[in-house]
Length: 239
Image 1 (cartoon, rainbow, N blue to C red):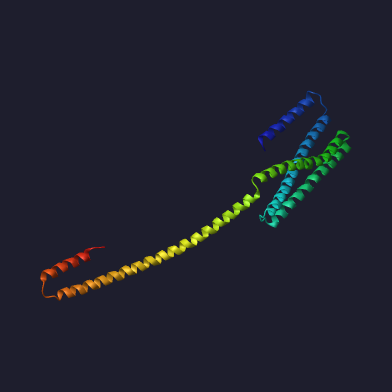
Image 2 (cartoon, rainbow, N blue to C red; image 1 turned 120 degrees about the horizontal axis):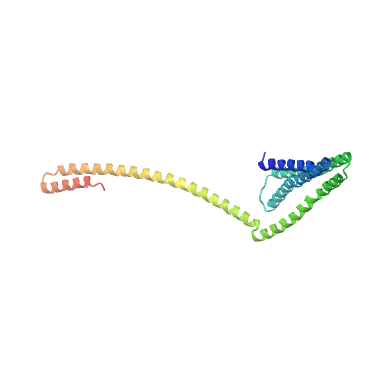
């Protein structure tokens, strides 16, 4: 229990005791006042909770219809669910007014307090309060919506959705190209490694043949020595 609710109950109890013991107010009068306060609070609950849910659900149905007119797909079961909630809350709100008025009228009939009939009539009359207020609020919101759609039409939302779809398609295409280029690069690297290995093998074979040819020469030892030194230099060069 909230602390403020406990405090309110304590204050009401103290006020009731003071009115009975010191102010000389009759208990029946206090009971009538208490029932009247409870009736007003209950009326406030009926006027807010079910009606708010009903109008919110109807607003959702309206937004779904507007979105479909603009080409935005909305699941059919969502509209049916919102419409069902709106109908149930409307029935609950109206029945709450009627049942409350009947209960107050019965209590008034047996208690003999004529003021209860006014409360019952007010409950029935209050059934029209929220629909009238909601219609006025709907007109105000509709005017604001028209002004907002003039400045920021739903076509902009559709264009933005198309742009997002195009960007998504471009991203997927780039991912596919990146995968293909990665595979091509790996294949090219493997081919270069094979070519380098083959080139090294050929160089080794040519060097061996060159050594054999140089060793087969009998004259010009200085030339042979220089060629062998050049050959060793070529072997030692990593490039």
